[in-house]
Length: 215
Length: 415
Ligand SMILES: Nc1ncnc2c1ncn2[C@@H]1O[C@H](COP(=O)(O)OP(=O)(O)OP(=O)(O)O)[C@@H](O)[C@H]1O
Ligand SMILES: [Mg+2]
Image (cartoon, rainbow over all chains, first blue to last red; front, side, top):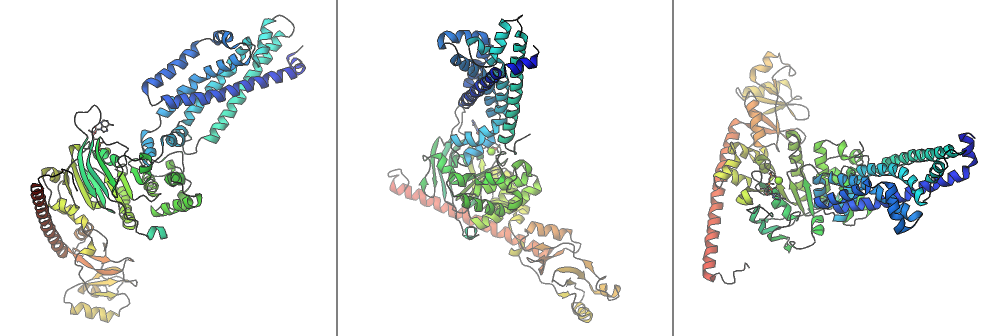
């Protein structure tokens, strides 16, 4: 059977996997962005706290995804919980690092001006510092999204959802009739998803970055 | 408009033994400043770099928390109130304009009114009004971003933002420090005009003494640790610096700088005989003859100075007014400083320049002699005033000492 007839045969299953893959990455990215920016906001003003935040997230990154899942399964069981936890943890590093870099890069005289005209600390962050750090944060989010696309495939190892299942099944039945087609379909699906997500993020960046600071 | 014409009067600021000791440094950066600034007054803090000007200024809106001492605004002790609320009542403008680059000009100006809860409609009107006030066309600049403005325009918007919620007090830290000299001159003129309308209490930091003279009702010359070397009117500081430090800071040419403080309208303006283009030639001849060698000033149809006519001029030009005489090359308005007038007189070949009114019409003439006399009189008057002032101060001090001796420092508290 050639690749395209394989795909149309398994359309239903493949679409379901693609949807679940996208949905898992999307939801994990939302959580990771909120948590990551939060960690950034809490730590950027303090040299030591900032370093600690980055060091911790770097350490998480150095653990192979396979191993991290293996460590999480005994604690969280199989399926969605270990997948989501692993994905969020992996996404944190680029987001935290870029949030800290972005927030530290805001011109101090602007923060002084914001404070000087009577903005509360919360208003300074929400109305001045975060919007100015936003391009940097968004870059972190893009990098993290690309990373998660690949890592999410590994989640099939923990019986997680998504296109990883096709790749895994294919690999484990290598030599059989449709094994290669299955691996190929899963991989291709991930590549297409990654491109679509990146495109969407670029679009979001355009819409949410003020014209006054766009490059 | 109604808002703008109402004389908004600033608030009294009192600094009472205000001190800032930065952690880790040996000496305080600001050591016990006492200062009382009247409502509607413009006070300039000048002094060498690092003497504590910014620290002093930033303690007034508590961007820097004082280590000790009190700040009172209109009698209210604000040293311990919520600093965020305090700052919304105090305009703040800084050197690099501090505009938020991701917000439009209108959004920048709207920040403080928004925070204090004005309605949308009121904010919209106010933004327009503020842009008008600082001389920027609202239609053109409303939706621009700061990076689409020149340095001078940014600075204007910065001032508009500081004034948007109509605070009684305005703090400015070298607001014109980063623009070119010509723009700076314009911005200074604008500020003078603005202050003329608004009567805010302004505390302005600069290290440019000429700027201080131009803008200040009073100038505080500070030495290190914000110790006040002299706190007085520009005239008094120029003509009677209290010590070598101050005279060093005033720099050379104090008498020349004094010329910047007086306007042409304050000195005697001479009258010269004038004729207009429409007068019959015969009358012009007659006037020239009866004045025996003197000149006539020929005015154009809108009574603006046009040409200087001498006796022989008309003959030589064979009676044609169009060809006779020398064109008026310089003139000054009544609002020009004496320094501008002197410049014009020195440049003029015959040492006199016409003074013009609001629409350029002839008002009179100043020449070298009147200028020199005026300057001498001014300097003499300044000297007398300063002596008197010093005498008053000494008397007051003597009186105080006397009082203290009499009460035997009872209580120790000031009334
Ligand atoms: N945050 C700080 N921590 C420690 N020392 C400081 C701090 N800010 C200022 N200083 C010191 O306090 C002194 C006064 O500084 P300040 O900024 O008030 O001077 P300034 O008169 O405004 O000078 P300039 O004309 O250069 O702006 C300086 O010696 C400076 O080094
Ligand atoms: Mg300073």
